[in-house]
Length: 377
Image (tube, rainbow, N blue to C red):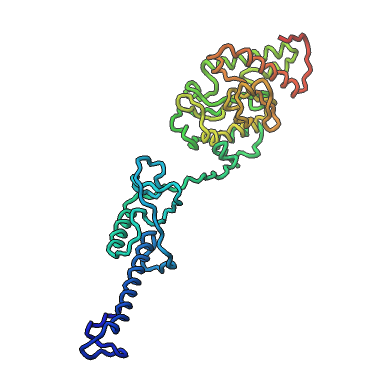
């Protein structure tokens, strides 16, 4: 900024001299000084406004614009209209005023006093630095579409070594050797014995349960104890009924020794709980391989877990039982587990109806013709 000339200076073409001066000669420098001070004040006000709305010092200022008149600040107890930018709750913007998060602070009105402008800028900067950041906008986020395997739980593990095995006893031996001392899921940590399955390696009928219980874990055999005894009685009753219907060959196939019995999981779940999805995914490939080498003509699924596993149907068991499903071309009859029948004896009649349908399906699958006395009971 150019320094003002002394009052006694004589301004002539840029040179000073003499001892006298007249008011007419000082008028021009004084007007220039006032204009320059006005420009400085305007520039300072513009800079403070720039910083107040979030501008960064060193960046170019926006185009000059006339000062805006700000409505007077009103104090109000309700906080319903409090701006989201974090302004103190004692301030409330007029309802008709458009709010913008970068708008200048309403506490300070425009002023021509540089000191007042500086104080307002300092107060605003302090308040901006200490105020909490406004919450992020609540935009609805659409979750990524899950594939069917994820929606149904972990995908079943496929064991290529168990594909295309020879049927019967040799195939079962390969599967058992492949399972070995299985450590593929957490059930191995609490088991005593792995329960593989037992029965005729070439059965007409196969039973698939959920998993071993305490008795099975102790003996290593499927369906022993109270539930196993009841299942043995059910199979025996099926053989007797087939004999009454005139199917002696089928009757000979319906005994505990002639059917095959296995479970979806080979190790006992703690407390006999329902196997979890990852446990079924790790172990399910073994019972599938067993059924492929057994090649039964009909399968009976005992309970909800084997029914949903074989049929890939999450419908309630009460809705699925009494009608055949399909597993790779093999008829599957869902029915209640013997342990459930011990707790709910009234369901035994429904299970017997299901087993009679199994007898008829076995006769149909085997192209058997009834011979001798027949009875429908």
